[in-house]
Image (cartoon, rainbow, N blue to C red; front, side):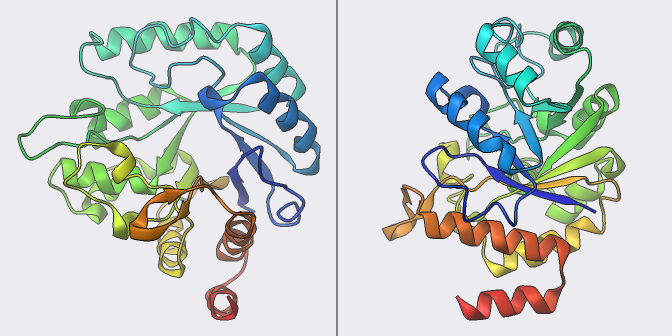
Length: 284
């Protein structure tokens, strides 16, 4: 059975989600030592940790030296005390980072040395090409399905981010379904979902305006159920909820109500059926 998970946010109580969520996604680079301690205390109430980044870790497989700050006391504590089985970070490189394949080979060697017993995965990202044709985030090459497929073949598994794929499809002037079907879906073991794509400002050069990480709506979960039919080897579906939706679609601090609702809805969408999902959204 597919397991469900959610972003770990230390300010949110997990008591209201512990019956619905099997795993907690560790926030990686944004986590400070105090949050790490809280994460380690909260984790026993769930099945396991989904490690997506490490502390002081540069999150891009094709950038130079992503492991240079990963081997420290905090990360050793994180890896040993969570009994981690898998780790993932972004596929892609930033402009000026040199040869993406040379960087990747070195990074993969370093990370396999650092984490010899842990399976390693990579997540698709986006370029955010502006009207002038310039990529404002990752390079356009590193968000193409061919590049992602190459990376997934070298890594142990793939991570598919729905919102990232929608933005990247636009970057490459492809339909979303065309983009998805160009990927090696058999390599994907983790799917990331988050809401707000209908509100995304694709004319903005700021990634925060397109990858909003809002609560998911009913339609987002219906789309997830359809996508799961294309990914036969998925083990986890992780909600990347991080913000509530404020006035004028602005990001505002997350509420406990949003957090608990997201966990429940994701559990129903993945483990139950359409009827139960519709009933859940009718009641709220």
